[in-house]
Amino acid sequence: MKERDMTASSIDPAEFRTAMAGFPSGVTVVTTLDTEGAIAGFTASAFSSLSLDPALVLVCPALTSATYPHLVSRQSFAIHILAAGQQDLAMAFASKGTEKIASLDWTLSELGNPVLPGVACVIECTLWREYEGGDHAIVIGAVQRIGLTDSPVLIYHKGSMTDHPSPVLEAA
Image 1 (tube, rainbow, N blue to C red):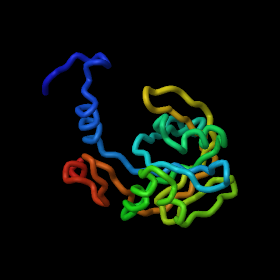
Image 2 (cartoon, helix red, strand yellow):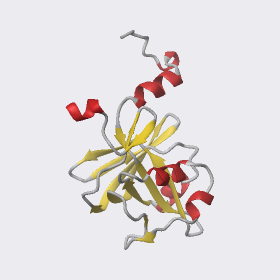
Image 3 (cartoon, rainbow, N blue to C red):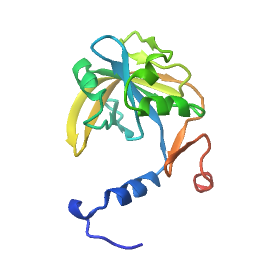
C-alpha cells in the first residue's frame, strides 16, 4: 500500500471515492415533507448509529441536496434502510428533481413523516444537532420510533448495489 501525505489538499477526490466505495454499507433513503406537503428525500450510504443513550443516529446529506433545507426546517425525518431488491427506490431518490419520486407510494406516519412501504427498517427522528462536514452536513437525529422487519438489506459496495454480501463479507 502506498502512503500519501494526509493533508486535505493532497487527496485526489476520485481516489478518495474509490477508497470509500470499498467499504460496504447499507443503502438508506431519508424522507421528510417539503413546504407543499409533498415527499422529499435523498439516498444516503453515509448513515450510522451514534449513541444508545440517548438513541441517536447520523446521516450526511450533501449541502446541495434539495431535501436538506426541508429536513432542517421541519426538524423531523424518516430514515429507511432499504430491503434487498429495492435498487429502483434507491435510484429514484438518488436522482435530481422530484418527478421520479412524486408517483411513489408512501404513507404519513403518526409522527408526520413520509414512510415508504416494504423497507427493512424505518427509523423516525427529530433533529437533535447539525454540524458542518465539508460539502456535506452531519445531521444527528434523536430516534423517536423504529419499525423493524426481518427483510435482508440492500448493500452498496464498490459502486454498485447488491442483495448479497460479497464473498469477502461472507467469510468474516
